[in-house]
Length: 40
Image 1: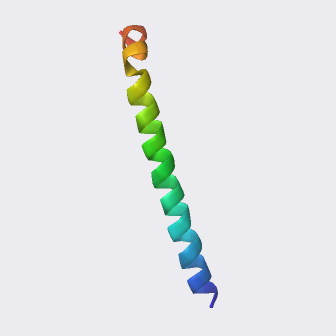
Image 2 (image 1 turned 45 degrees about the vertical axis):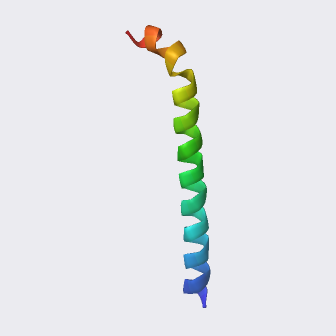
């Protein structure tokens, strides 16, 4: 029984991580023109 709970938690955690990564990538792409001169 605990294994099914662990599977549900891990799948939800993976979904949250993928959403967070998508948000970070979108944020970086949004600010890339501002950050590019500072990186050079």
